[in-house]
Amino acid sequence: MIQLFYPYVPEEAITEVVDTLKSRWIGQGIKVDKFEQEFATRFNQSYSVFLNSGSSALETAFDLLGLVNGDEVISTPLTCTATNIPLLRKKVKIIWADINPTTLCIDKNDILKKITGRTKAIVNVHLGGIDNNLGEMPVPVVSDACQSLGIVFLSSQRLLFLEKEEMALCQRA
Ligand SMILES: Cc1ncc(COP(=O)(O)O)c(C=O)c1O
Image (cartoon, rainbow, N blue to C red; front, top):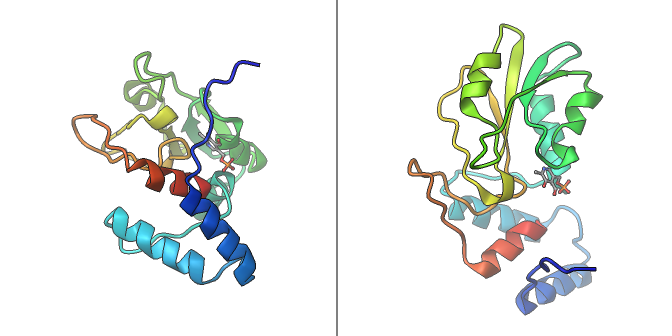
């Protein structure tokens, strides 16, 4: 097998996990509260809410939009299957938009061509850490940032990454 990459796990993160397991607060608790607060501060937000996985976060976002059978959502096929599976579960009609050949992310111009009165949302996947800023859209945009935690939106499309340690911590959240 050819190993392309391996996850970076700093020693402090291992210590934190062991501490947490020993504390018995292995679900919601003080560590989660602290992490949510620090994460929000790091990204200049008033609060953040953590779930157990990216799949749960997507499911929750689609629930909050109140999507029902027959609604249309514009999405991209070039992503992890977890992005679109919750839409299939809700029997939402997925309208595929093309990708931008440079970024491999969903293409803004193709989205605009495919928006109709039935479009309830757009799913924007920031693939592989790409900042795919769509700007203003006429319907809600769900950002799948599972591969891009730590990037910061900048109009210049430049990417800013967190320090390596912080990034590793975020990925495990
Ligand atoms: C783009 C994208 N969306 C969603 C997911 C699902 O995230 P999770 O495995 O945390 O449920 C992944 C996982 O790699 C992903 O890469």
